Length: 624
Image: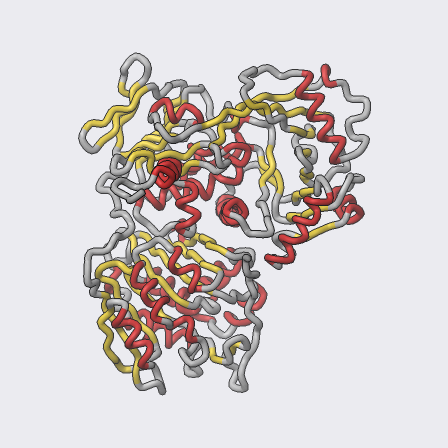
């Protein structure tokens, strides 16, 4: 069963040093947390010298606390003229503070004031999983892993150059120093990684040595006479995160939101990107709808779908915060989303999910029918879940904003008809055989057409016809409401409802029978809202969504070792999947820490279907 995330409680000892009530221990030395971070963690890992002139440098930390070590590393990076081009900082925290408590904890550290303010402004919702925050125009990346280190560290996929071991004292929190956890840390260490910690306890020294580190004592900070520094010396060759490519150029095929997001995330890392789109404008197919909703999913067992949508949702909010900051935001509104229960069974499942996860009210809460109606502004048929930070977005504005920010070279009105491998490069040709573009990598973000360019024996896609109905504005409706269908508050004078879900139907026309079905869904959400509306007189839009058998998108390598990638099959959740999917894809292509736990990244990998086939058939040479 999933474990709720329990926030830290703000407390101080008699001397005013931050204190953990959970572990009966101090968060940092009474002689100064910032100075301790500088001496033990930066100095013990040879920073800033070791990151100089690197393309990217990764720090891994056990125990984020309230972020002093991160702030010290960020400040040192900012002040170093020869700094790494991109600094990744990955930190695990079982009991994160709220943003309000962080403000209290940061107040005494005036030297970090501008940085700590930025950190708090980006502070994520306190829900389990990985949260990726970007600073310095994406050159400083903080990945917060909220949850138990014993569960999360084995699920991280990265190659740490420097390791900050900063759990509470081994006697107070032995799990953070266990041999099993230290071995898990070693599995994510780069071959030449260093580590440092203030603790010199024998179990820590022994655990580090058993995990492959050569540890030695050095002069400690202030009144603590000793500390440990260590160097990773793997006993055998280990599999690591992929190496950064020598050529950082890519052709992205498809200018819907999946392709647009891929362009933006690659360009943010300095890639040279060419975007190829068969239409004369971006986002004219499934991404061309008037508006759509974005929201996460919850389930009592915290399923892969629930965890993935949670990660995608929190990433989306952070990503759009960055767009807002530079005045390039797409058209969107966090008006909230109500997911009404369709029946008593679903209502019970919703309550069970909230009881199991105990999420913060800012993420999701339950409202009865009266409360939901007051929230929506119109009488609703049932109560259900309320996601206050969710809402609607206009997909075309999203795609255009992403492409504009990427500054990709765009080839509109040109169809990618064939791919050709020439040495280490890809050549993209049109139907006449003319070369459209060449690059070191190709990203197929063109939905069902992806398998035409890169056929697979194991991937099966289905195309779903979805028709939306456009209505006169329901003026009092203030939120998105879902119940086996969707209705949006008025967007540019239009209320959108739907959508149909038509398998094996390739009719692209707008049909009265689909409007009729959408009006029936509307009635189940807002009784009386469809009264007097003639399905034959309504406008709408039909688009085709591509889905995989497990309803999860395909994101990652399509052919091992060929720099051919996919980002497609986003189904009806493209607005939600696009940002995190592109971040995952770019991280894979660049050889950076992944923004997802490995079990979730594997759940999205295109190779998952072939792996399932092999597992069912049994591996070659296996015994019957």
